[in-house]
Image 1 (cartoon, rainbow, N blue to C red):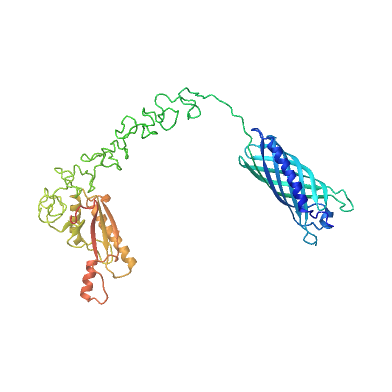
Image 2 (cartoon, rainbow, N blue to C red):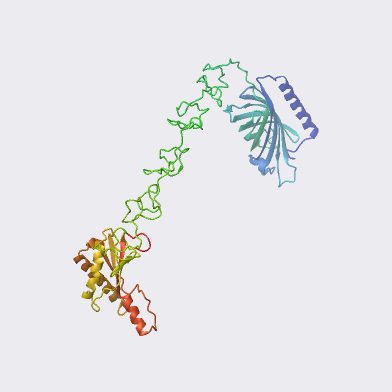
Length: 500
């Protein structure tokens, strides 16, 4: 016969009713403001520890337990409890029904509070167990921790050991022992604390009780802070304007306060000393040359001739190297655009070139100045395939030298040599370089400063007349003759306008 087989339901129900009634009566007589009362539910699963029950009764599978408890705690950390527990041990390999242990017990539970987190507890319970037709002595012990989820509710893990004594060795030669883990839920009243009467306090004597005073150690004074009860209104930037009114509480208003914003300084976004409410160029500093017509703005120079627009009478035309002293920012008049001003041009309506002789200055001759270059009317001739200048070209080179000496404002001229396409490309490049060097030396030897000249050869890379296959012989010769040339280009300063 299975020693853990259930007895009749009526016997169990009667005993359970007696236990619950006695517990309820005890709790009813001990209700007091300082006493905690309530109930607990514990659920768990575990296993039988003793070999005899595991092997002979085949209780080697999982066992389940459910326990209900009523408790009263006359001391906050100690509770008296009455329990009814029910253990079920499965025997899947046996034809017998599962074994039950119904226990009715009383016990003590030590449960100190750990801060505000919850209670650590250890308890012990003893009583009778009903296992089949037998009634036996039964006790258990548990260890766990319940987290305080609410002032009335706690939940946490528990480990429990159970033990049923077996007085009859023939029927059951070993006591039944088991171990289980699970959860414990407590629902009960909270321990009431006796109220402590306290007189209202006002540490800073400003008429606001400390419980409401956000600055209990600092009197609010005559100018309280509207946003912080009991606090004085501050002046963070120490500019004499209280924070409650100061629209720039972290920036002092300084010597120039903004009339439109209390406690703020007048703005100067570009830090040029002109305040934003007067500055017509708020994001651009006026700099050392202010525009007299636009407050806070820099004076411009549209034609980049060094004369600011406020004084420049020719804003869109650079003054150039020969400025007009009578008109700030304007060049001297030059009707024929030959770089010789009308005042010294002997032929003001005919394009010519500068000359040291006043009677020939600006008059047509062997060359003229136009489009930023000294245009020569006759080419410079050299010995065949050599860099030797032929004497018949001395006259035109002398005219170039006279024009340069008469134009001290021209600081730099590039002498550029070109060849035709006859012969080797590299040889033509070398020949053009040597010829321009010969012209440079001739001009220096005849009074032109070397610092005003530079020489470059381009060989056959920049023809004036492109050479096409199948050209007639006469046209080919004429094109090659035009491509053999020396040019004089003004590079510093580049003349203003399109033809000088």
